[in-house]
Amino acid sequence: MGLAVIFWEGLPLNIAKPYKIALGIILIVYAFLRFMRFFTANKDTDA
Image (cartoon, rainbow, N blue to C red; front, side, top):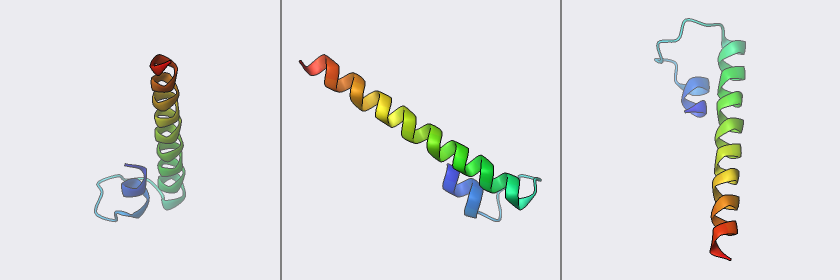
């Protein structure tokens, strides 16, 4: 989703390019943190 916000020109968001990039980076970082939390939670339950 973050990459779509950054690179997809047809996305109907009426915001300036720097803010689209910032929003995309925030979404990418958030997704990464959620994946890390998911995998560490699964690792703890396997023991």
